[in-house]
Length: 143
Image (cartoon, rainbow, N blue to C red; front, top):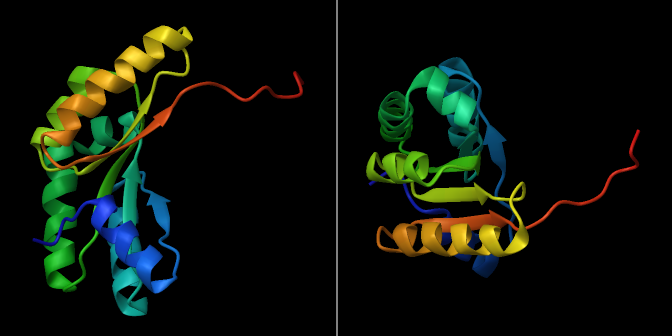
């Protein structure tokens, strides 16, 4: 399989002492160029998309095209959901083949955020999906 989990990719990188880039894609052309470039450089790759990216291009399209590009270039990659907030949205994308999720409940009260993260993590781990969570917000300068 050419779509792999970030867990698998990052464990290998840690063992072998290298970094793994993640690129946020915004359309199918961006997806093509980052996969082709990573393959040419023989670099591992995490392709990330926001909810807007997946709405625009369609989760099935992104997974299918990423998978086809990975096969064409013989270059495994990971697909990551970046800053997703809705459980049902995440579950749909996991069922479609995404294997890395960032759940962002930072807009919620802390206890509700923890509950959301636990529910998403419980679901995702059934599919061997890696989960990253945003548990709070960093204060800015207020400008």
